[in-house]
Image 1 (cartoon, helix red, strand yellow):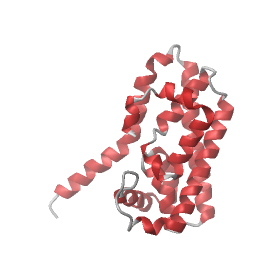
Image 2 (cartoon, one colour):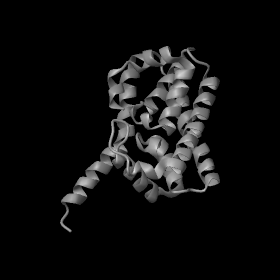
Image 3 (tube, one colour):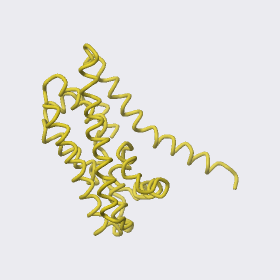
Image 4 (tube, one colour):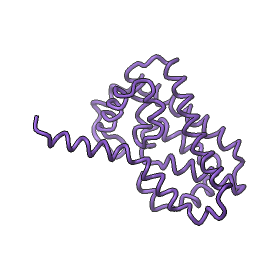
Length: 205
């Protein structure tokens, strides 16, 4: 995801339009290639552009919500049908076994609400629905957590960008540092986890 730090997200979102944004939200929610997509910053930037009239905020928010819900459902179905094969799959550019393991740990720690919390955690949000499918989580339970998580993330972050764009004059001048801050904040849980993991390894048993 850090490769998007070097891309003009505002220009990218303007170029790809509604369906490009929806496609990226869908991919990050349920396809393995989603691990490299910008997620939070993409939604925020799209919302910001909606405040400038580039998008209709209602169509944008609804489309992102639907894409997030459908993406997680695809991830769940994939995990339920093919998930176990991932553990015997060779490492590749798109797939790393440690990501599945991280998602499993996250799931064990937070239970069903991991589906909601994972939305705000890069990489984990792509693998959480797959792990839910692997673990044969009851679909009805998954479905409602998925709806809640998709609403809070896809709609919430998009509206945050929209209202901030309306509330602060010339906020476009600060868009790049705001997006960088969003990326940093979204990566914090993973950074903290890595730090704690290293401390644990160094602690004498």
